[in-house]
Image (cartoon, rainbow, N blue to C red):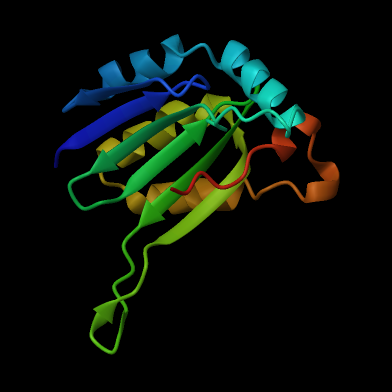
Length: 153
């Protein structure tokens, strides 16, 4: 299975890497300036009258089947992620839209396991991780966490 990764900065700059190894993907994730980009993103979100584009920083992976894993590390301890996967259902012979699952409460310590599971096509483990980290209710979300919506494009 081939994996493709990308990062997108708050500035809108997008970089891509085709066919990386797991370690190369983790090196890219770890080198991403999350703190600076989240601060820049918060500034944009806090000034809604500003015509700048709203680019949430993200680290993404996609495989040959179209599955996607989108991660945003919004603090030194927490990350949000969305797992997008095919819906095998059809409606009048037309495939239904992709399905997705999201959490805003992932421990950053589990990001390597999450990425490894994606590289290994271990989707059951990704769903297990989602069950371990249910999203925080809106009332418990921090300001930083509130700006993180499901990373669906």
